[in-house]
Structure formats: C-alpha cells, structure tokens
Amino acid sequence: MENYRPITKATADRFLQLLKTKGPQSAAMLAAALQITGEGARLQLLKLAEEGLVMSATTTKGVGRPVQIWNLTPQGHAHFPDTHGEFSLQLIETIRKELGEAALEKVVTARERLQQEKYTLALQGITDLAEKLEQFAAMRTSEGYLAEWHAEDDGFIFIENHCPICNAASKCANICKSELNTFASILGDEVEVSRTNHIIAGDRRCVYKIALIKSVPAFLP
Image (cartoon, rainbow, N blue to C red; front, side, top):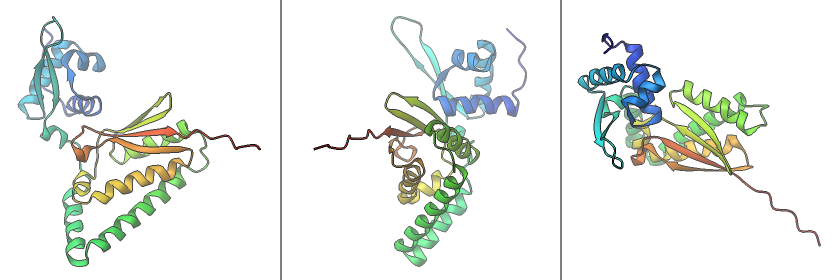
C-alpha cells in the first residue's frame, strides 16, 4: 500500500470534478482517469466521504464481485457554486412581489436578449457548427456550466454538467426556457435544439440534442 498523504484541495477538486462531469464512478475508474493506484483512490474517497462530499453504494453485475460506486452528496454538488444564488433568489422574489409576474418576465426576456447578443458577437464569423460548439462550450465553462459536446450521426449533443444559476432557475421556470431559446438562436436555423435532460427536473446534468434539419428538395414541375 502506498503511503497515504492528506488530501489537498487540488486533489479533492479533481475527484469531485470527475464525479460531477462523468457521474457515479468506481474507485478503479477514478484511479485510471487520475493515473493513480486504486488503493490511493480509495483512500482519497474515504477522506472525501468523511467530509460529507461523496457517498458510495454497492452494486452487483452478473456473477462478479460487488462493486462500490461513488457519487457526490448534496454537499458535494454544492461544492460547485451557484453564482450569487441567494441574491438572485431575493431579486426574483422582490420583482415578483413588488412589480408582478409580467415585470419578472420582462427582466428574463431582457437577460435573454443580452445573452444572445454576447454569444452572437463572440461567435461571429464561425460558420462550422462543430467549431462554434467548441467555442460556445469554452464560454459556458468559463461561466461555471462545465460544458462539453460531442458529435452524433444526426447532429450533436451539448452537455452542461453544472448549473451556476440553479437556485434562480428553480424559482423562475422561464429562465430555463430562455436558456433554450438562446441555444436555438445562436446555433442557427439549420438545427433544431431540444433539452433531453434537465437538472431542475432532477437529472444529474442538462443535455441538449442539436439535430441537423435536413433540407427538402424544391419541387420541380
């Protein structure tokens, strides 16, 4: 067994980010990803469990030995910040109470317009959809969404492993609708964007399917 060293913040962050972005993992899977020994990974996970950041469950597949799978606890998820969460909640409730639901809708629409203008400007001149998604994912990650994407046969999948505005979105459903509108706007008319997984609905992450719209040949008489 390797000598155990106290877990550092950098090491803890690597474990937590892997569990956040990849979902539940075994110690062996985490060890392989981090290029450390399985025993080292287990020791670090036990330390994180003591701090209340991760938890484990035992699963059995086939006739093999039971496997211990690790996942984030609610406290572990809270390790990833909800940007100005408390202030956002107070602001939403104040607007709703003092000015009404219609005023809140106007604020959300105004935010949507500003978001679209910002992303459109940053992505200006990029015509290749894959390149656009790469740049968009980098921008969203810098904003706290831990975004990634990959290609599929009929389009692309865009994933956000964290929502830094989750508290606000949970109190104002139109924020999530606005986010979907923004995706559709900046990616153009050649695609159809739909949300297939939703953190607010209890999913681990938000997943967007970006389907290519097949052009229909014009009818020639």
